Length: 456
Ligand code: TYD
Ligand code: MG
Image (cartoon, rainbow, N blue to C red; front, side, top):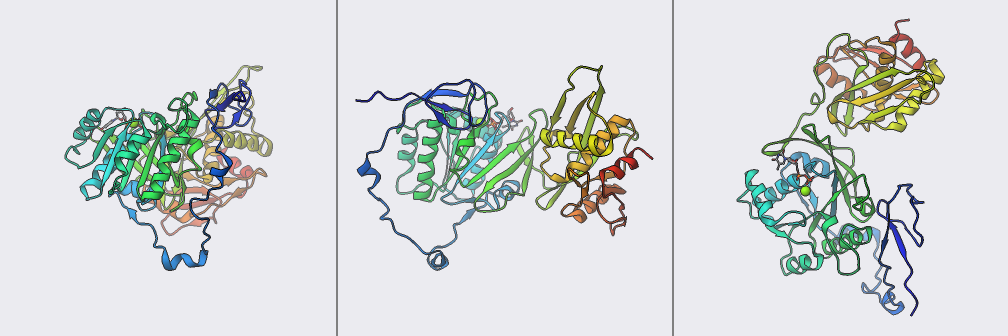
């Protein structure tokens, strides 16, 4: 018999090689290659034994004999909004997030609500004992919800128990990294195990019509398989974000086969669990003082909802020679480098001898490209020590040419800013006064914008 070949799998991206290396050649992560059991090869005959009969169906025939899958609205409006209306039967959803961010709490609240509404719901925890989950449910005031609780880690046990004549409408697996599939060898949490366990659970979802929700931890050190390897297997991927030290949490759809990915759900973590924030627009604004440099308010748009956030920048002059640091919280660091480069090349502002720190206040993460102009304003204000007027908001996309581009839904952003008491907007819109009473100051190039900020 041939000697089984060694196989090393990157725990971050799932790529496999036959030779160990310190760095994964695919994703570039360090120290993530772990030896895993070789994949069993399926015999040829079994491979070609078509179980489904190989039937082809017509796309145009779909609307006549296949009904649209049902959605289960959880009644937690912010969760339903991120899902695009609720969990879809027979689908698989992955909820990823840092440990302790509140994934278990959110799903316990959702399962309890669905169970009280008459759905058959099972919550399987591989991390906590059933009593622990029950205690938490009681603390959240959900102790009397008829949720089937189990503490289990064997996928076969779980599917055998639940796969009877009445499979549940919703099955929560908390977390996928603790699950063990006996189809392959390997410790729970390795990429192969996560993939195999997720594969079995997803097949169960498709075959039995159960909506399966998989919880996945994201860790930076790579000791647990990142849920990234599962992203293409599931129908919906939600990310639960936020700073643990802050109260607010954002649920963002990264992928959704049954809906859009631009809406977010906003929650606050309180002693009674997660509460919904229906109107988050002023949530991330702190009270600011006139004359403080390096801060600008950016009216972000999340789906159809505006959220005003404070962009903060700090620059620290360095003695010549040292390499300056750039640190970013809540925004893309590559995008910051780009804005710094455009400010340097097109406006003659040099940041090369200064450390640059950029922070989005309140633990919010900005993904809206319209933030460029607000970031540039904060940077210029920090460097020049001239405050941006306290009643101003700024938005616009900056091109490498130094051009400031108008962005989508300017009127929604302006309306919300006016509602929250702002009086002027720095943007690439047409100048004038809009219907909400905002004074619009228009800039087509970053150069004229910087001149304006510097008072020239
Ligand atoms: P949890 O849902 O266990 O996080 P995850 O499953 O993502 O790891 O949430 C854990 C944190 O939430 C923990 O630090 C305590 C806090 N928490 C509250 O503040 N209030 C509550 O009602 C609950 C249940 C948890
Ligand atoms: Mg948990």
